[in-house]
Image 1 (cartoon, rainbow, N blue to C red):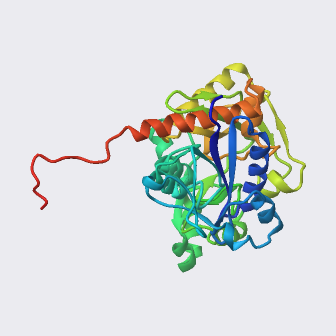
Image 2: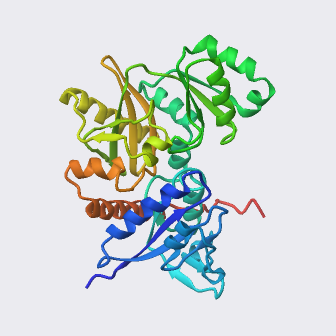
Image 3: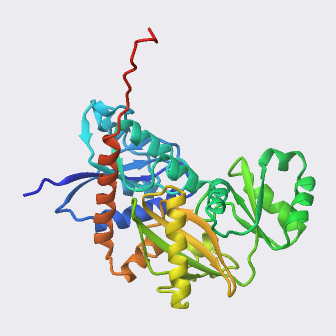
Length: 369
């Protein structure tokens, strides 16, 4: 019998999307094949402490304090490749970590960098791809350089807004029409994002976005656009799912429309012309490669009758029961448990490849002594 793999499922975290992460982790843990995997639940509290126990997911959902004896850590050294138990120094081996952290301190390359130092394979994009995929400003610059169409935008530091919001607003109004979107450069689930129709709303939106990041993206609103999403799966040779459409219950797909009010709808597959669908799929794969992503990503688009606009990439898309990433692949012929198997396989493939690269160099002479 083949040995079962130890799969760490990492969830919670220091993020405005902490609760979303818990729901995604619930779905993933329930769907993972217990005949193939020994699951190691790893929960991160909102303050950033790591704990592992069979009930840690329920503990975080209840907002109770975890038991101190269950505190754990990942040590940044490959000689102790696993989950370190703080109380007694035990080490639980980890073959792969399924990162289910949405937003800051998880989707942004920070945890990926830690796992790279520890020599532990993980599901999803690497450190650089995760960081770029999280930063809305940088990713737009990269996709533009790759020849991918995206909405006009500009950005400011939050300190510029604090020093003179009126000057910032005047600069925005010179370059972008209303309505426009105001977004923290690094956030997910539409946290801190607002749609501004006039100067008063723009000022309030800039103030709100300033609470979440040091840089703020202001983007031209695309009128009469449909929100189309594509799921991408793979490493160097990724494949794209069929497209799906989000019909938001609010004016745009904000946090409440995504998770709270339950009135938003998804259409899978999207009712669009086959030629347009294929074009969007090819753009999604092109963006996935340009951003150096791996494992998985959901690529979001704004589509009008005349144009296709790249909106953003999500390197750790939601895995809740209503999430588009698994729904799109299920509609494309890959069931949820099989999708998880393939993601774990891709993680191991990428981790094995990375482990083969040299990390030292022998100079011709010992000049440094």
